[in-house]
Image (cartoon, rainbow, N blue to C red; front, top):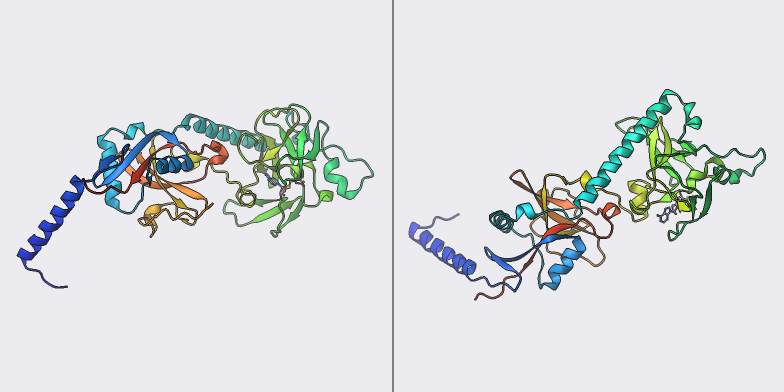
Length: 368
Ligand SMILES: C[S@@+](CC[C@H](N)C(=O)[O-])C[C@H]1O[C@@H](n2cnc3c(N)ncnc32)[C@H](O)[C@@H]1O
């Protein structure tokens, strides 16, 4: 490092300051964009999905915000505060999302209650008002026919309209909400196989001990093996839960006649079928936090907290075609800002996605 004389130092500082001031004062923005510091932004307060916000920004002649320096984000935040925008940053589909989250909790409570009753008196199981027992098996039957033969009256096995899903389990009559359709029967294994008919059961809280209930053999399972995986919350009508190291299936809503039963298979099997089930309220605070979508990033970014990612400031929108993208949200809660990732919540939001306000940016035009 070399020493500089004070006179030279003052000279350099003056030049740098002058150049910077000229830039800030002369930034020219396209119509619809406003000049904030040395940047051009456009704020959209009506919530949109990630894909819609990218499209709207592109149509307006820009892109979503390129997160390449802290100063830019700080300036954006300051601007939103000064213009009184923060309290207008409301999630469009907030009410519906909160409602569906409450329903999930209610369901969990119901299952816990059922399980407690079952644990107190296992014999209650078949006699339970809302419990559907297997059909009685005939004395002589072909081994592989077992699973289908256990289908209780009022239910049937038939082709599913879900592309390449094979057979599914259906109801002929209306089924009440919170009806336990029975226990998922299968062979018990200690070692994980590779079966899409297999449920894993953790026997302790630390998830150290586990076993598998594998219904791949129709000779050793029941009709519940035919229940396919739901692709969204509207078609999901069955919930699986573990009680006493067994898996039970329960309806989550009233099921209309001639409807296929569909349940969520869990994260891993869901991913294999290309389905993600994540509720925004499990990751974001929908009650007292304001959100604005700044940008997006490709799927390869794994860190939830962008601050710690080395590429935080070099998000160059280098999205390869068809790559799943994550939104980047800025949030405001109790005077503090925080940047976080927006996941894919379409299982609960539908194609509209998480509908939040967003910002677009364009490279400033030549100085005026
Ligand atoms: C437990 S079995 C369900 C019964 C199966 N459909 C049958 O005919 O035997 C799981 C398999 O069903 C198919 N499946 C279930 N849900 C699906 C979905 N949403 N989309 C495509 N295939 C599905 C997959 O082949 C999966 O491996």
